[in-house]
Length: 99
Image (cartoon, rainbow, N blue to C red; front, side):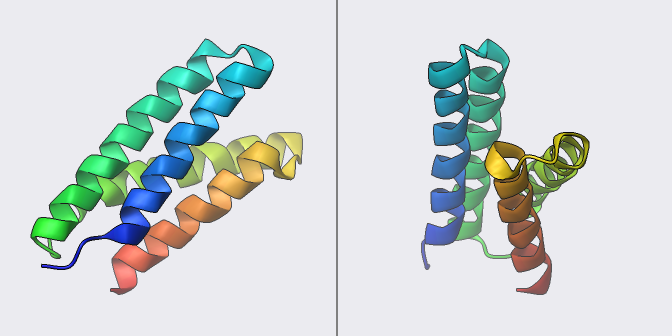
């Protein structure tokens, strides 16, 4: 079976983003959300690595993040971090639905 490297990289980016939000702004909620969604995405990447048709955990995590971060980007207009995370999450959703 092939390892879902893109899925694991996406999960690491989410977790790192949550940690950076905590480190820079002191946002505990960013840390909790980053670790939760990063872990869920890593679990989804693990599931995809074992069975390519078992993509639901990754799809749910990236879909929720795409919506939430997209709304934050629309409200704030700031590319960092909301716009980048919304874009990455949308790309992940499209990747999971197309492949």
